[in-house]
Length: 74
Image (cartoon, rainbow, N blue to C red; front, side):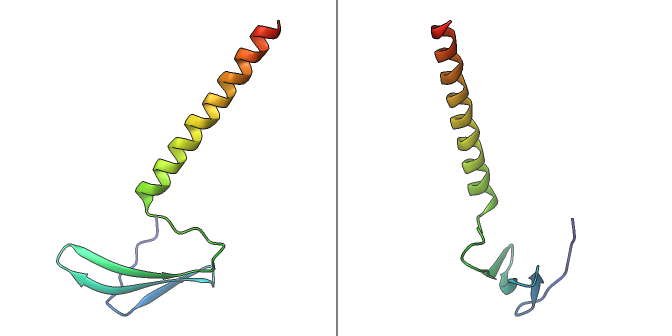
């Protein structure tokens, strides 16, 4: 993991097309701004994990259904 220090109104650039800026720091809260092309998904980590878990559950459910169909045919 790369760790950088930034002050308010300072930024970092990722891959030449994503800019992350520190907008404000209040006690234990950091407000950041992200500029990225529309095709780049930007999600909070907890939302990303929820989507990943739901996708895994759906994929597992689809595999179970396929296995059940195969067992019925045999």
